[in-house]
Length: 394
Image 1: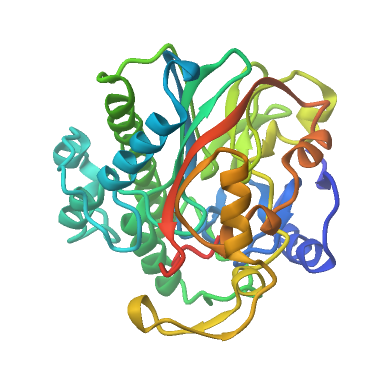
Image 2: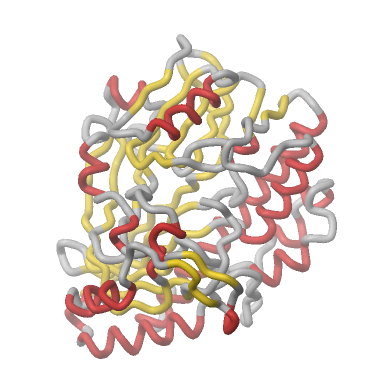
């Protein structure tokens, strides 16, 4: 491929400058329309490398992704009050927040059999990983219940590899002497080196871990809603990962950070804000899709930082005190959710709808590379509380 940067949608100058820095070492790049500034690599940024991977590009939350499943159940079969009761049970059953462990241990074969547990970055982390498998975390991670245009119920979840991915990434950044800062240069590793192979092994295991966690949460929520873990449709994707792909006859390591793979006929679940419709999309085989390296958005994209939205605080938990106001009125946000008949559990001003772009406006910039199959209207939204720290910097 000829070296170039494909930009979709509007982009702030700082985000574009950050992507230009990525392009100093990448062979090809894409900015999706949900782009915004990230740590060493923009969210919504895609970079293709020959024989290299950007650890900054994959990010701290290795294999963060979305999963959505469609249940053989109509939303109208439950009353509004019954959905509220189910939301409470989901919120009680699934663990949200930093450092949380799962009170219901999850069985997963790879925890015992995967050879990559011998990886230098994962030494001593198996017990932590096993304890956290199936927990959701904080920040913009969620468990939602939706109804589609035909009134069918969907479960949608968004989270990644939890403490396992964060600790593995921290290990490699330190090993390579990389800075942990928004304006840091991308941390690039040669895939022909021992450390490159070690990182790829750790990332691959993080991918298995994230897939297993999201699958368990969907099954658990399905049991709460309908008494069983069966469904009639499933869509599941990472959006913080590096894939080996062929483009124009050459092999590349394609790093997507906050960007969803969207190859022809590949389906993706793209989440919106807590108040707006999310979507199931299908990739198209078009020149634009090819120029985008068959990549699309992973969400709506932030327009306000967490501090801008919620204000500045000191301390955490019971000792948390606001020292400067934010732009979002959390009480008004919660009233808006009630008015929209959406049951909200947890969250805070830093995840309010006003913190994000409008998903439909973002999707419009990708309309020649993806097609919307289903629109999902939220019924239940479950997230960590506003007093929970987000270590993933996404």
